[in-house]
Length: 246
Image 1 (tube, rainbow, N blue to C red):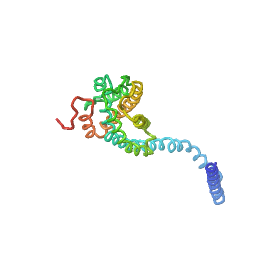
Image 2: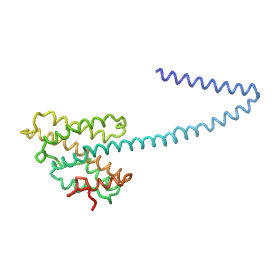
Image 3: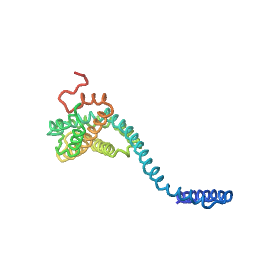
Image 4: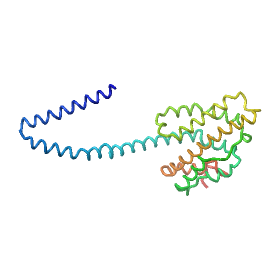
């Protein structure tokens, strides 16, 4: 309420200043006709000025600011995949029965276009393959994720994450998986019902993880082709990933 009172007060002050200047002009020149000519001209230009300043220029500045924030966020996303994400993509892939289909759909290449990336993201978001926990060492997975938790917590401290809903959803899904695994005293001899529950958490994480990874790869292809080249050579959706250029 105090903020609005200040705004009203400032508006009143500026209007009084404007009236005072017009009054001084009248006292000196005694020319009401001249005053009204310029007043009407200024009023006529006011809507165009509002349009240019408030709508056009403000939108341009807002878009530039948003692009700058997204650029910084992409650096955060890149750090996540370097530290956690790519390894997690590889570890969790063995949980899926149709792993070969996932590899086929997500095996990005140098010749990929925007259409290819869009198709891969849609596939990841609608991932239907039901994972299981028989081909993965859950104890090893828990150890890996717990070791990376402090790193991911530091990522959440970035206030700009509010601008990146997909990545925030990925982090929360990953944190939930960590909590589920850490809450169990042992990963051995778990009942099938519990393994199925954990598999559901893995599926949630993998859908977010794969979609965000593909989107990040497209960003690298457009802006940092040298980084994209490394991703193409080392991603886990190929038979023999290797950083060596052949």
